[in-house]
Length: 378
Image 1: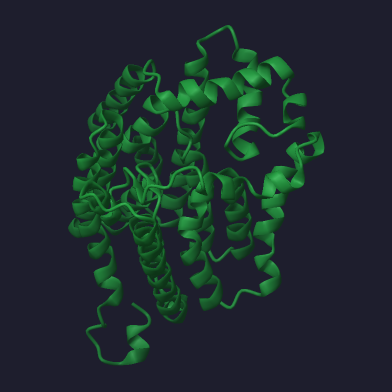
Image 2: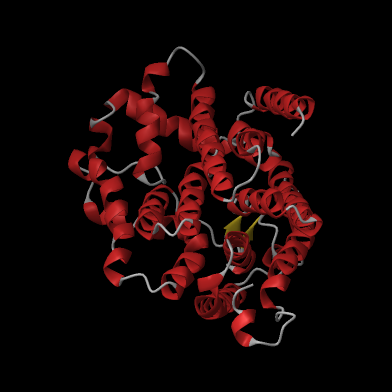
């Protein structure tokens, strides 16, 4: 990457971060700031004696670590600084992934990820923290490429403790474990790390049953079939279809697609190249966030990052088109949410569906040689 291009991207990213940070959204004002102030008033340890907030404790731990900043800067900016830490972690994870893929100039490319529009909007404007789970997920994919299966499962456990959206990469992890015949005892590493991440809150007094059911309560918060996610169900919602029956149908379709994904790739993935593995990994969140009901506009963030990694590692023009389509779909979903225009999110389903098909097509096409043994080693 030319120094001038690198500098221009970083300066642009810095400008937009500065421009968006002062914006305070309803989620920041109504949720995150009250959680933060609860920790400040109760104490960074005593606050966890009783359940509070709607997020898993690892995010609340970070808010507790940020309490010394209280009074020095505005509460809303403190919340966003916590989210920006997640962005930095995601950029570091991208650097590690690109190194594993032997991408030239991986450090500069990873730094440029900080200027990715959907990533900036997520933390700097919305005050969200989705990059915090995306970072360990990317580290898990890196470990998968390097065949370090125990590390992969450990990173998955960390990610799951941070955000429920980690389940979007679940089909890829499951297919890989089956394809490579990883011993079942190693599978237990993920729940062990998940429990370890929640243990500080439990030791402080947070009831165990509440800790392990936090994601079930999150799933029951909203009942719309789509929450500004750029997928086909947002199109249905925009057209006036938003029933429980349709949500049930969406769940059946999603489960069917996920089962087909696991069945196909658990039988063929063993000999895939690193770039092909990354393509299969990208397909998982595209299918999950694209077909599951009750998805939000920011649930495609993991796909945004993996699409960029695929584009720079394969260097194929078609893969750059995939990255552009995924990013465009995400931005339309985010703008639809911010402006209160759900039709924008529905419009974003078009580029997202195009990207999903472009990712899928090379994975389902038969090899040029009819030999089935060669077809497996694409």
